[in-house]
Image (cartoon, rainbow, N blue to C red; front, side):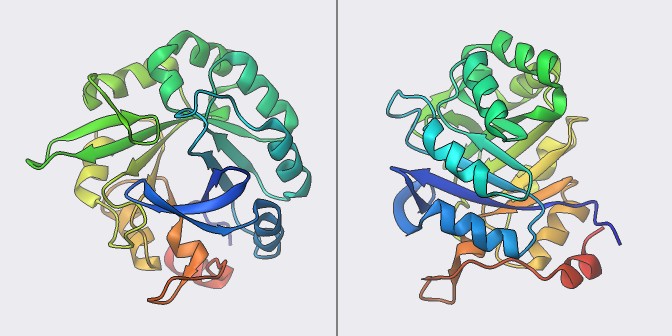
Amino acid sequence: MIIKTRVIPVLLLRGGGLVKTVKFKNPTYVGDPINSVRIFNEKEVDELAFLDISATPEKRGPNFDLLQDIASEAFMPMAYGGGIRSFEDAKRILSIGFEKVIVNTLAHSDPDAVRKIVSVYGAQSVVACLDVKKSLLGKAALFTHSGAMAIKTSIDQHLKNLEAMNVGEILINSIDRDGTQSGYDLKMLKSITEKVDVPTVACGGAYSMECFVQAVKEAGCSAVAAGSMFVFHGKHRAVLISYPKRVDLEANLP
């Protein structure tokens, strides 16, 4: 049986190691990226996404040496985001062996660069990341720089911009739910999926298979992603890399 819904571990890079945040803050070290990739290889994951959360805030590009080491170990498709400032950065990442680049700041600062990546490598190679945070009144807004910089462009307008760029996928990342394992923000996800024809990936808050099912069936997402669920175990959040068994994924996801 082939599962159409991909289940994607999202791994956060910081200073050469892997960390996990809560609401984009307080990064906790969870291990070495190379060892983690080897474990995920054994678990036959659908895809891995790496996000360097310190690259853009530190005004630097991707750590290409580390990405080369990661790509040399991985048996599954991979996506990378963080510090991608130009077409040339994306070209190098894709040449290393990553199948996709994840862009957030670049989609705001240089849409033409995103269009060029799409035109050269195809829409399937570009994932646009929306880091979304709600105000006290519940109004959702976009952020860049790992949640540190608010964007004035409305979500609706940015979605139109992304469709015009012809990106292949949109990763919807809830800052409010990040690392909380309190469930996806289904209402927010649905409000976005209803406005675009681009495939969407839910991220932020997952804690169980049921969360995945809800994101697909209730919110209309095409794929699901999670961080804490795959690197922590138990109420004390002991570091333990895990991934659902294939038989369980087949039994629950479309």
